[in-house]
Image 1 (cartoon, rainbow over the protein chains, first blue to last red):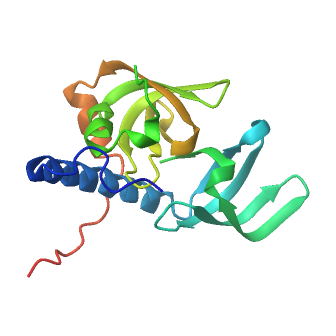
Image 2: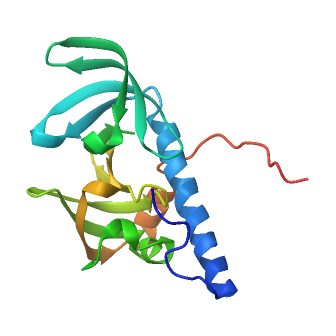
Length: 94
Length: 97
């Protein structure tokens, strides 16, 4: 994962601004994740593979997504964990 | 145009891209346009929002896949408002004492 402070080691004011920005960004991202819950989403994976599933949750580090009814080429997987490293993007409609 | 590696930029750089229409180069061949709503500071994943007559569509691009980010234009007041209200949740009680 990403280092806790990219910009500033010493300057406390800079650190404060950075923390402020971090919290705004993270809150908005979490809101986005919450609104994905129980929605049909499409995962775009490597090699142009696209699979659909119902989004459940993400872990805090965004390393895995928990999904239900994953539509794979060889059948429907009732419950699954998807490694985020294998995903390029996720799309859904609000 | 973003030159250095996207996941290493940090919050103060990422936040400058929010509320902007951007062109995102993803992987080798893909390209996506949309309004940047936010960047997850943990994974550097980008949330792009697209408004059309059919509704609002969202694309979350994983931070590791972002190759290049180019700003196309700033959002006007109306677009900022639509971005703000894209993920409104029911109000939760404050945890402050």
